[in-house]
Length: 312
Image 1 (cartoon, rainbow, N blue to C red):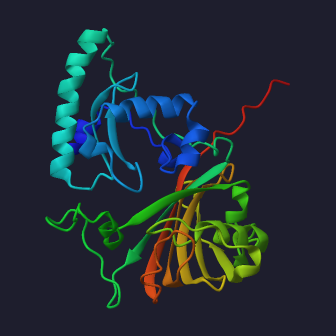
Image 2: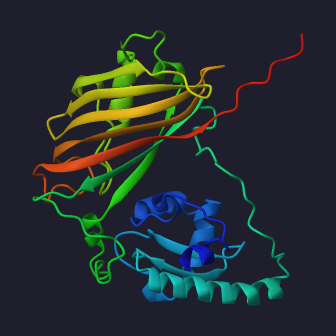
């Protein structure tokens, strides 16, 4: 039901600190920017209890084409019942607004798989999902279990949090061994992938590891027999990253499928599981830096179309 309602809107994601920072100095910096003015106009029209919450303006907001208030909630929880009611109220307000403003009510366009901003030129884009894994020391709460989320304590999200990021691969052929024998992936390329991808951002933010913090980064590749015009490659490896503040030790397994004709990557999944320890930056591990289990899933997200050959 909630997903059906959400399809009536155009989803937009933005870093709220750039739209409406909480500190006075940053607010002065963005005061004249159109996006801030649009978001501020929307916020000023919201009920105070839904908008004026301490700490951040992160949330779920439903607005009209010119920033008109339809619904929204700062630091919105994942309570599906509350969100469904807000979406329903927003759609009812939209019906009134579009008639008053004579807005066209057109279907939301279906654009297919989009390349995230900044990765439009990436020959291969990887989508990285990371989350804590349940263990004796660190249990996780199912997100949708009734009563699992306490909206009065927004930090409760750490019990079921996960995160997602993207990584562009400039030379996808590095994932494809050239011969039938087992091979090791290019060390420099894989070290960079490890530094940028395998970062504990489950509960917040942390910077990539520096190259000197890579203790181990090895990816072994083995071709499998060609089937249905596709070449399968099996992967396994080990990763250890340690900057003194936080550490990851992971074992990696995966599989990729490549077109025999041109070597294009058509499917890829790498799964890395292991131990995390420590805290860093704003990843909210300070209260629990003890060892715990963590998992990464690295999938092929999209691949840019090959350039069209010119006429000779």
